[in-house]
Image (cartoon, rainbow over all chains, first blue to last red; front, side, top):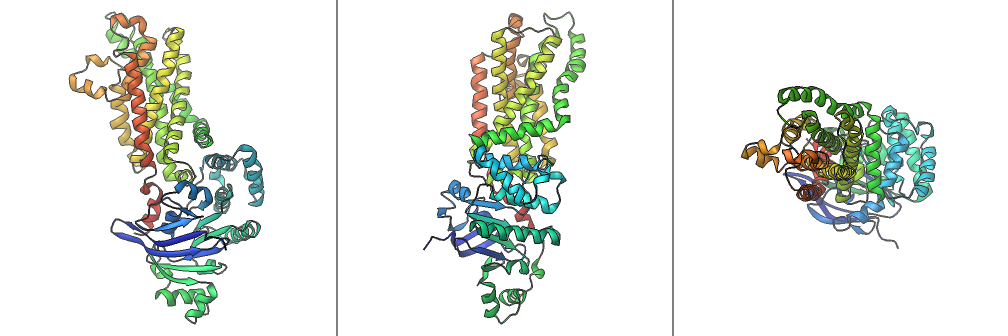
Length: 250
Length: 265
């Protein structure tokens, strides 16, 4: 049996007096498509940033790709890709320049990076936009370029933090198509955060996060069955006692 | 290291693409030369052994390197606002590598701008430095760029947003310029201002540039005022301390997750 891709034990984070994440226990298996579902402010992004070593935990520990997030930050960052909620691309650089910049940050030699960038631009249908500044791209294309940037170094684990935020339905659909194709091709472990219940449906397992606490964990059918719900939306309501939208302070 | 190269290359591409910035950096010293230089030269005409515009030349080169390096390093603030800093911080490189890359990019940009300006400015004021003078001048530009670039990264990592930028310009850049010896000798300042001048990295940079370019007037008191090795050591110290301070500041949590934290309110 292989070790877990992500193993968090009592992981928590406070921002001043605000308890962003209480004590999270979470084990995500290699190759799993894992959803972190919850309203804004539930602690989803905090969890991702803790696992990506961008934040130091206030308590607990976590191992990502078998490396400790506090002591082995570089090794953790080498194994993960992270697509942030907001774009991280340099708007003044072209799509190609952004990817080349990322390749250098990840220390990929040019002879490795060049064919990979070509392949990713093809896969994400950005080939014609390669020499256009990112500023001129639509939201959907920008997000696609962000994801291409996130997987350029072929990470073992990919974090997608609210990847569909601000995208129109068509861009959303093509994004899910791309993520599905990626997983099929590489067996990539994906941790997705979302506050849209329907986006969590295709996940292998879903953790429901509410006010910094783990409210429920299981496969989508399990979550529904446990409370006799017919939809994940209903299940969320039963597990947390309120609707997703209610606490959506965004 | 490839990551450092990537960070430096990006600085150059960005600079080159902002044509306004290129023109401003090349044009700025000549505006000073014509307007400030012309005025002061008239005031001091006939009273000193050196034409004021010649005296000003090292200071103007120091000014170019200061604006070039400091502004490039301060672009870290924009990197954070635009989110690019997150891409850098989630890469498998140390915070100190990021700080060094930013500082080196700023240094090379500032130095390149100063070399271009020197190629036009020095013939304009009929200053012909010796080969040794040119080499020392280059050392002065690079060391000043490192010290000011590191300072810029520290400032950028400390200030929260681009709105504080004007404050930095008024309370850091202008005092630094006036207390650098670029426009008048530091030794004529009162004890308090002189003390402030000596915690100013640009003062050492301009002093070293005067060693390089004005050695002919050293006897008349217009050359460098401090020993050149001391200037070098001071600049190196500023750079090293700046880099050491900048690295942890850059990775500070607020920089990365501020946006996420704000969502909770």
